[in-house]
Length: 185
Image (cartoon, rainbow, N blue to C red; front, side, top):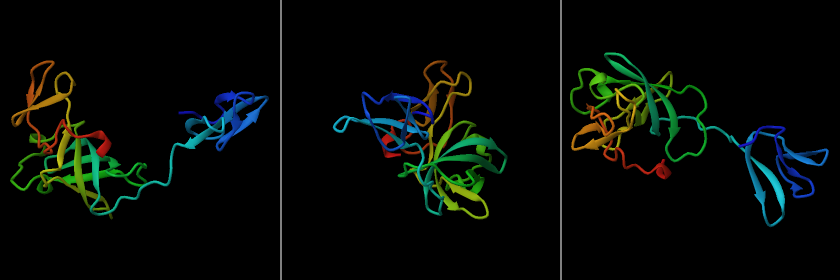
């Protein structure tokens, strides 16, 4: 990743490509992006770091990080739309009401989620605010950290356990907790 003005190469080594300029024999970046060398053409280029952002819509499957909990809801920051390689535009704060967490009765969201959990959820509403749902077996926590030592929790039977300190915690996990493929995200 390079920033505008970063030195990339010399004009003796490579040709100028998209996203670059020459200054006193030095090829520099004109934008934030990924520095790439086209070996065939011996050309320096900088591919843009951002593209047109994704606009959330009803039905999107997203990853969200639990940021705050109340007795009747979870506030989560939507961090990624599954299947998209672009950033999200607009509001990213989603609400997961206790009635939308599971098909069964959940008294308190703190019984099944913890701050910092990464969960997979479905967007059920975008305007006037983002509403999420984790009722499907593919939805729920996909990554969780130990509440005591902050190491990764491992799923053992229906409980999550920390291999570092032995702490055991309960979560509403997605069916693929701990085995999801990041390339599928």
